[in-house]
Length: 189
Image 1 (tube, rainbow, N blue to C red):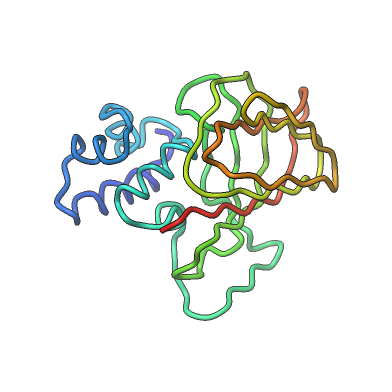
Image 2: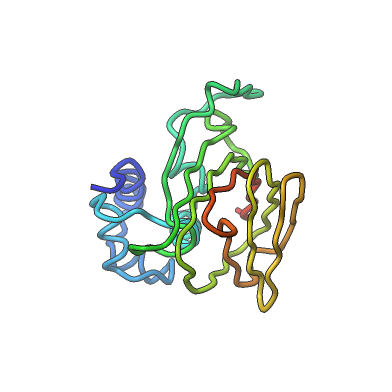
């Protein structure tokens, strides 16, 4: 089993809306088999399909990734940035590098941004993917490559990039060493 936590949430929200897997697939432009495998916890989901699925369900991305909600400000201490998900970088599949997401605002309800610490592990290249919204990435350690459209940007410690995520893109560790980044993802409601 890959991650039943996210799959259970997808299935719960889908069923509460009275949608079938086929209807969710149509609304999200995702493959029915992929949605079924995510719900069953058989695959490690990726960010791009999860964003499409969350939009189709009418919920924030964080709804699928978080555990609890809290009213008011949320302070996350360094030791409390618990891993909330392990995702394939931009596609669901075997062989691509993984991203370990550590939520920095898991308890904040009704937020519009998704702040994460992300450990980017090396892996093979795969196709670029886009989704609605914007992303801000800040490199804390290691080196990062961001393929954005036809360009590739290599970022080192202290470098950052802010982009419209509708443009096809891919985030990967540069070379064979992992990288750690601060990422803030915005997806319109």
